[in-house]
Image (cartoon, rainbow, N blue to C red; front, side, top):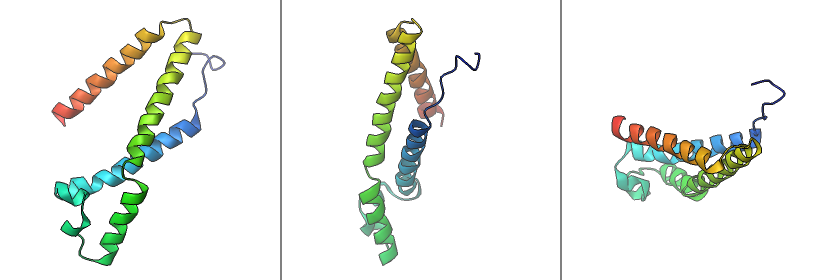
Length: 114
């Protein structure tokens, strides 16, 4: 695509998406390393006040908030894709459902293969 026709990336949107993914990773690290209930209660693994403080810090700042932010950004990117499809004269529903198909396919492959 010629450079004059290319739409610039929204750096702020990309940065927020990266921040949300890293926040989700920060919360999932506990689930990767410990039993499932350690995610909910620090009493199952916290041996020191530092462990409890770090659990409280992540619970207050990250728990649920990053998933919500990621979901909001998913909706925003969906609207951008629809607007760009309409601006090009394409069928926005077809573009949206094609994207959802590929995302579902990658998600299923990740679920079953990894």
